[in-house]
Every structure is written in structure tokens, then in C-alpha cells.
Image 1 (spheres, rainbow, N blue to C red):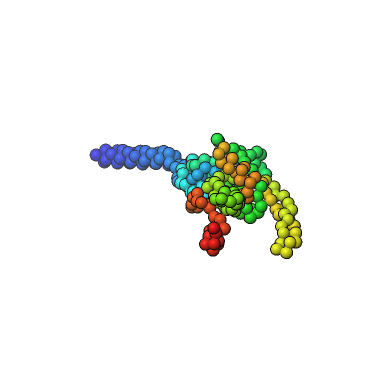
Image 2 (tube, one colour):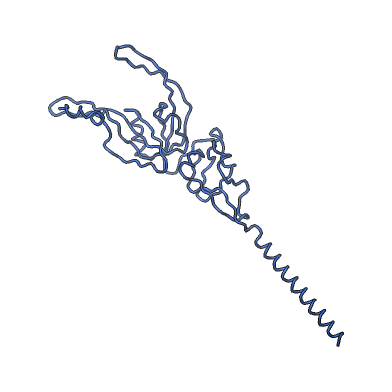
Length: 257
């Protein structure tokens, strides 16, 4: 009887040990199965970042976001912030959902050639520093283009008159290239009739536009003065009649024939 009891106890212990080993084995399988499933945060693109577009401009436009992904899905070299590439530009197009890799960013000198978006034309204009927002316009920037010129108006029963005006030419275009800055001489005449010559820095900027927009930019740059206005993601621009001297000085409107 005692021997039988001992055998039963031994059998029970063996069963418990077997059960424990099975539990440990199953836990090991679960651990291996969940290894790499831990969620981690990486930086991804929330909007398309064009080649040559600066990190600062893309960040201003809200094109970066933090996303949680499985550790197994983290791409080698992915970043968690833009601090290490703050002064860089995209070396190729980065699409929404892509993880941000330092290897995909570099300096402007590393961009081998001008990349024109599909179905667009590249048109260049030469601007002074004020007309290009004092150098803050870079490849990838979104700008509105304004034109200042003189409209020739036919007066009833009299000769034609030129009325200077400024108005919106294009509400939103992308800058895809910024050339080197050169200096040109500009001569003006003072009220006393003296000629004053000053050195004015000018830079060639290239924008991506369609054919109709290209025609407007070319005509405006040859027959008036073109100015860029830098946009951000919340900027609202609309086509309006523009501004003339009468809008700035109402007394002109009151005395005009």
C-alpha cells in the first residue's frame, strides 16, 4: 500500500513537471513570436517632400509626423526627429508614409540636376533680394507671385494714360531651383536731378508651372516687376483687382477726372 502511494506521488510529480515544461515551452514560443512586435516611434512623411525641398520648409508645411511602428518594421537609419538634418534638403522625392532616413537628405550641392515635377515646365526669373523675400525662398518653397506694372488705359475723348498697379499673378507655385547671386548696377535720379548708382544683388529663381502660368510669368517679368511672397500651410491667397495709387491715396480718387 505504501509503495503504491509512493508511485502515485511520483506520477503526480512527473505530471506536474511535464505540465510546467509545456507551459514554459509555450511561453517561449509566445516570446519568440512577439519578439520585434514592440511598438516604437519613428519620424515619417505626412506629405510629399519634393527633391531639393529643405527640411525647414517641409517642417513648416507640416510634412513630418511621428508614427508608431513595430520594431521589426523600423528601417535601418530611420530618424525620430529632424535635428540632425535641419539644414539639409531632400535628395529624392519622399512620399507620405515613408520613414525619414538621414541618407535621403544632403546639401543643395549634392542635388545633381533640376528635377521638374510631372506635367510642369521650369521657368526662371531674376529677382532682387526684397523681391525674393530676402533670401528665405529656397528649393521646395511654395510662393505666390505678384506683378507690378503699368496698365495703359484709353481715356474717353483723350490720349491713353498709364496707370501703375500691383496685383496677384499666380496664387501658388513651387520653387525648384535657386541660382547664384550676382550684383548689377541700378541708377536712379534724385529730386535734385542727380544720378545715383547703387549695386543691387539679383538671384535667378526657377519655378515649376504649367504652360499658361509660364506665359504669365514670362510676360510679367519682361514687361513689369515680379515679386515672390513666401507661403506657409495656412496662407490664403485670392485673385483680387489689385492696388493702384488711388487705393493708397484716396484723395487721388476724389480729384481724378
